[in-house]
Image (cartoon, rainbow, N blue to C red):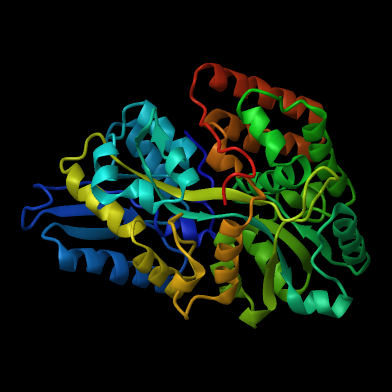
Amino acid sequence: MRITKRALVPLGLVAAASVALAGCVSSGGSDDAGGTVTYWGAFYAPTTEEAFQEIFVDGFNAENDTQVDMEVKELTTLGQLTDTAVAAGESPDIVYADGPSAASDFARADRTVDLGGYAEEYGWQDAFLPWAYELSTIDGSMRSVPASYGSMVLYYNAAVFEEHGWTPPTTLEEFEQVAQEADDAGMVPLGGGNAGYQGMSEWLITAVFNAAVGPEKIHDVLTGEAEFTDPEFVAAIELVESWIDKGWLAGGAESYFTTDDTANVTGLANGTTAMYLSGTWSFNSLTEVFEDPEQWAWAPLPSLSDDVEPGVFPLAIGTQLSVSADAEDPDAAAAFLDYVAGDVDRALEYTARTGENPPPLQMSADQFPDEVDERTVDLYSQIPETTNVGYATWTFFPPKTDSYLITEFDKVVTGDSTAQEYLAGMQDTFDKEFDAGTTLVPFSPQSEG
C-alpha cells in the first residue's frame, strides 16, 4: 500500500486533507435531477469543514441538478481508505492522491479516466500554472487535477528570535550558528521526527536536498543525467547525520521517533524549539496553536551549501484528484473537480476563511481577498516572481523511490545505514522506475515560478 505524504498527519495538514475528496456517483448523469455525487473529505478543524461545505458543496449544489453529499472521514485513515478502495476495484468517483506521482500510478493502472476532454471544456491548461498542468498529464493528456500547492519553508517564533538577537538564516554558517546558540540555551535547535507519520522524514529530506544539493542537480537525477550517489547528495545526508549526532534535530536519534508534527509546532509556539523545516500547509495549524498568532513567522529556506543560492522554493502539490474509471457519471465528477480547484475567486475565498493552500492556478497578489493572512499573500507573491524553485519529493519523485526515501531513512537516523548505503538503495529503486518509463518529466530548473 502506498504511503501517503500528508493524509495521515494529525496536525499541519489542513491544505491537503481538506480537499482530499473521493466519491461515487449513485445515479444518473450530471444533468439528471436528483443525481448524487458523494465524496470523502477530512479536515483539521470544524471551521475548515464548515467553510468547505458552504463554499464548495452548498455552492455546487445550488448551481447544479446533481447534488454533492459530503461524508467526513478521519484524517488518519483517509489515505488508507482511498488506496484500499482503488486496489479492490471499488474506488470512489473522485480519487484522492497525495501528488502527481501517486496519481500517475492510478492512471497507469487504468483506475482513473483520461481528463483531456474535460481539460479542454474547462480550460484547465490556461487556468493552472504550466508546471502543475504538465505534471498532471501522461503522454500529453491530463489525468488528474492539482487541488493545492505550496512549498517548504523555515518556521520560527518571531518573539523568540528577537529575544535572542537572531535573524532568519540564509547560509549554512548562519543556520548552524542559530542552532548552536539555541542548543546552548537549552532549546531544540531544529524540529523534526516522524512519530505517528513516517512521511514526516520526507519533509526534512525535501528541504535539505533542495537547499544543499540544489534544483539543477535534482533535475539531473530525475532526468537520468546524474545519480543519487553523487557527492552532493552524500554530503547532504551526512549533514543531516551531523545534526542528529549533535542532538540538534528533534533532540537526537531517540527522540526523533517520539516527536510528531504537533510537538514541533507546539515547541515553536512555547519557545522550546528554535526552527522547523516544514511545508506551507502548516500555516493554519500555526495560527491555531500560537497564543499570539502574529508571532509565528516563515522564511525561505537557507542555502545549506556554497553551490546553492539562498531562498529556493521546492514546488509541491499536496492534493491531486482524479475521476475513477468506475464512475457512473464522470461528467458530474469532473464538474465538481472544476468547482473545487478551477476557479481563483472561489479558491481564494476558501484560503481567506481557512488559511488553506490554494490550487496552483494562475493568480496575482491583487486577487487575494483582504481577509487572507499577509504571510500567505507574501508566499504566493514570492513564488511566481522567483526563478529559484525546486522539487518536492512527493510531487516529482516516482512512487517507489519516494517510498524508499521515507522508509529507509529510519536506518540513517539509527545509524544502521550510512549516507552512501541509503543513497545507493535509492538510486537502485529509481533506476527500475526510470527504465520502466514511469517517472515524471520535471520542469527545467530556473524556468518556472
